[in-house]
Amino acid sequence: MILLAPIKTEKAISKIEYENTLTFKVDRKSTKTQIKGEVEKMFSVKVHSVRTHFTSNGHKHALVRLDKSSKADDVATKLKMIA
Image (cartoon, rainbow, N blue to C red):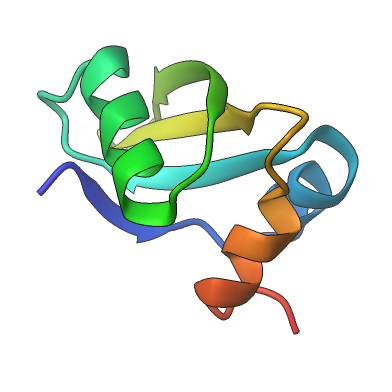
């Protein structure tokens, strides 16, 4: 399992609305290519780019920016992140 959980902070929600970007907690050993493939397969969307970083408590987060043809709002609604 590559995607562990969606991040639902206020900052992550604003990235959905303004940057068409989803934020996920991911497996520490996952690569950007694996994350991209998993998101495209799970949600039937086109991914533009993936950025990753480690948090101060050792978790890995991925910022997944969707292509203009795909809407992050739709995926967030499926995940029940936004109403």
